[in-house]
Image 1: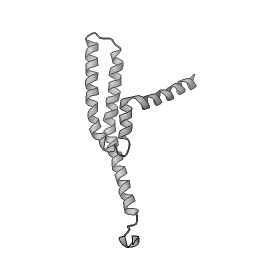
Image 2: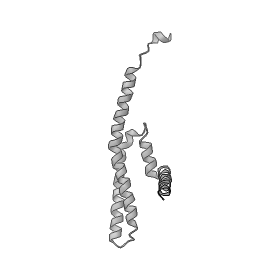
Image 3: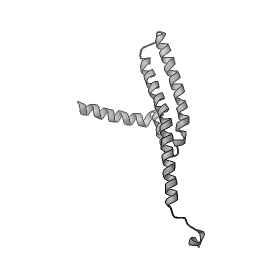
Image 4: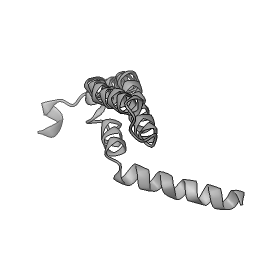
Length: 115
């Protein structure tokens, strides 16, 4: 039984990672070129929190309780975007420091060596 649950969770994670727009965007932000977009991506949490507010207002107004699932997904996505900002900033600083160290370690070439 545990093996089946483990198998399903692995495949569900792979499907979510591959096809869900927020996960695709977060994967793009985690690349070297995308790290600079981590802090501005935090602003994408605002529409998700607004959608959560709308869903809970609709539920209070008598709509289906299934909207709690939508609200939960919106909260989860908002939290992902809030967290990626500081995380990407720290990773970007580490990468830039590593690149700076690598540039300092490389020997300097002069034009006389190439002539």
